[in-house]
Structure formats: structure tokens, C-alpha cells
Length: 492
Ligand SMILES: [Zn+2]
Image (cartoon, rainbow, N blue to C red; front, side, top):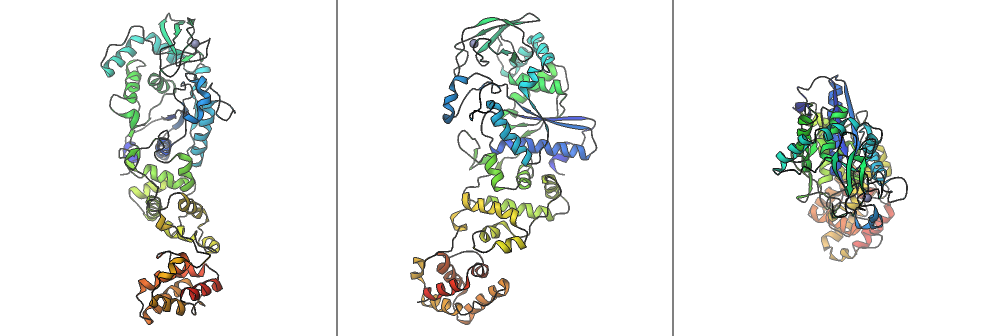
């Protein structure tokens, strides 16, 4: 049984599926796995006829706690919530800038949740009830932290930080008391290494966007506030004792609600390492959707059981053509896990999948005058991806270009090869590629030139390398006079 069907086998009644993302930097491809997995869960529940809602949070009330070197100009906003700090391009907020990139990727992937901004949930007072609960029951929150981290939690610690009314920072404030209406706070210069507070002290209401809960508590607060029944987590949060477990326990012991269905999903690896946009390892979301159709990107995210790591290093490898092949195969399956993964990868009407292999198409897009053939076979959509693959990822031996001048390498042609090219130059009248391919082969037999050498001579003469795409298609994609002249020159 397909992993998601198995996971949801016994789930009944109305459901709220949630996923979330902190829009504070480049979206790497691993950040798309969560939304796609949750979308699949949502679709299966709908298919089963359950009343189901899919919500997606942009956690934009988190303070900026690090900046890539190219954004050093925003240094003064360290500690300020990303919903308030300005966008790197000057339009709107920092959070909106990266949030809109995520929204566009979700849209392309056919993932259509109800999207909310956490900053607005705070501002409109929707979290006020949860804030009151965690402040009133601070002892219980401390107890959960103490159990999980196996250390005493200070009696002065509260699960809340205010937005400093003086300097506007959130990451630098510490709440030291709660009287049922207001919290006492201090804005400290040395609370965190990455931002410096202003020294302000006072009392203020914690409600209506005046501050925020630490995100592990906030996660449980979202489950409580929105009645979430299913939310998965990536391995970075989902390991034993990690933030996912903390949030689960807070939901149960502080909010006294039932835990959502648990699902921990593994990372994508690149060359055995965890992908990371800050370290430049792996592929970001925009790059991924430039080289894969959305359906195949979804297929990549869901075809493997989420508890398994997936290696995806496309640079100089055949991993992308192989993925297209797997997708084609899955489209032909009538039943089984791959057929199910194919169905759940669709973003609308089930698409008609081309039958030409991606690797062959990648050769076609490198040949001149193949546009008609590509059109005739209905391959225009995939041709776009093949071009990107050749340009950015393909190993060198998958790339070729027809040489405008006689390649140097032709000086290495043997007497037999020259004889063969001279003969082939007189046989270029065939316009049917299949038949012509046979003819090219037959000619080598007639002349008693080993076929391997014969084909190599064609590639050397046209491409300057000893291998290439199917010879007949290559030759027919070119101007006949050009090929004739080139073969004659090469055979001299
Ligand atoms: Zn301050």
C-alpha cells in the first residue's frame, strides 16, 4: 500500500492539516517536501470524503537571527521580527519578500492551502487565548522543558517575548513576570549574541501582537487555536526530543488537547550531505522547478517513503533523466505504489506523458532544425526542461554541438573511416530517419568497416567527438549540402 494511504488508513472524521515555513531566506528544494506531502495527505482525505481543511503558516513573527553576507546592510534589523524588518528589495517586509517566493512555488506545484501569516494571527488577537493559557500555566510549560532537556528551568523564565516599545526588537527581550493582565519585561544588551537590546524595562499587555511565544510553544498554540489534527515535521525538528516532541507535549499537558497525527520526514541529501541553502549545498526550489515540471517535482517528493533519505545531486549526473524515466514508467502502471505516486503527482487533469526518453530529447534539443520533430511528438513542454538540463546539469559526455569548422579531431580518422565517410557523402538522399539509420549501418558492413568506427567517424566529422546522438537523426537535422561537404572534407 502507498505510504500515505497506509498512514491515513484509520483516520476518520473532520481534519485540519497544517504545514508551516519561516520565510527568512532562500527556499531550498527540501522546503518543498513538506507542502507536497501535506497536499497529498489533504487530497487523499478529500478523496475519502472527509471534511478536511489544509492551512499553511508563514511564520513571519520570528526575529531575524542571522543574515547572509549579501544582506549585511540589514544588520540593524537583527532581532526584529521578519514581518517588520524591510524587504531586501525595498518593497514590503522581509517576511513578505521570501513568503511570496514560497507562495509562487506552491502555486506552481498545485499546492493550494489557506495561507496565513503568523504576525497577523498575533495582531488580530487570534493567539490571545493561547498566550493567556501558556502564561497562566507557565509551571506546566517549564515542567515540559525540564523533562525534555533534563535540566531545571529558571522560575524567572516565561514562554513569551515582547516587542520592545523602545527599540522595536523582539529577540532581545526577556519577560520576568505575569500578573494576569500584563507582563514585566526587560530589553537586554546581552540576552543573545546576534542582537543587542536597549535596556528598556516596564510592564505591558502581551496581547494583540505585542509579543510572541517561543516557536515550540507557538507551534502547539497553532494546533490548539486552529484545531490541527495532522502536521508532519522534517527530520531537523522531528528527531526524538526535538521541537516537534516538545510542541506535542505542550499541546497535551498545557493546552490539554489530543496530539496531531505524527509524521517525520527525512531530508534530501546532495552527495551524501544534508542540503543547505546557506552552505550552498544542493538545489533551491526555483532552480528545481526550472529543470523539472511541477508534476515530476511532486513525484520526486512523494515516490519514496518519507522516512527514507533521498539522494539528489543533479550536477554532472543522470539523476534527472532517470527521474523522467521513472515518471514515464509510473504513468504506464495500472496499479501499485508507483501508479498511486503518479496519480498524486498530478497538478490538474492527468497529463499525457511523452514516450520519448528524456535523454534522447536532450540530444534533440542540441540538434539544429529539430523544432518540427519536437512539435510533432508533442514534446515542447519537456524540451524546455531538457534545454535547462543540458545547460546547467548534464555531464559533459551528454553535451555536443555541431562544429561550424572542420574539427581538428578529423586528423585522427583512419583510412577505413575516411573511405566510409566518402561513401556516405553520396548517400544522403534518404529523408526517413529510421530507414536511414539502417542504411548507415548497412554501408559499414558493405565496406567492411567495423560499425563502431563508422559511427565514430560521423561524430568526429560533425561534432569533434567520438560519440553522439543517433546518427541518422543528427544528419537529417542538418543542411544536406553542409553534411556532404563536411564528409568530403573529412575523408581527404
Ligand atoms: Zn529595546
